[in-house]
Length: 122
Image 1 (cartoon, rainbow, N blue to C red):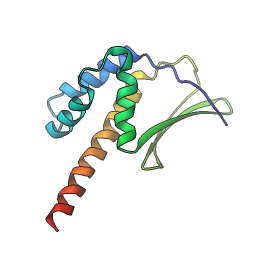
Image 2: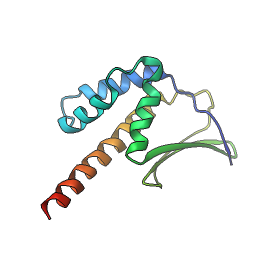
Image 3: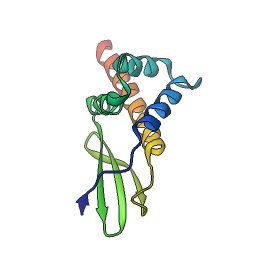
Image 4: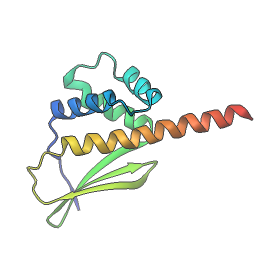
């Protein structure tokens, strides 16, 4: 297995994250935490800044080539949580990756809030 750089359009990624943030059904606490962390991020750095927030909550991704299959493995707390597999190296995975990372980040933020609340009740 070797690593590769997936095709991610950073503008599309940013627009998808911002669209998700504005969805009516999102948890306002999660939206506010992410928005606070992303404040003043320029488009060029938005992707990196979002990945830094993910890392802060123990989420990252690893991209590997396994024979002819390209794989993006999403890891949460060091464990594989999701995987994207595809064959076309030119495929743009911006939207799919944004949705998955945002979903995982949302879960991690809510878990941390729950854990902190439980800890404070003791």
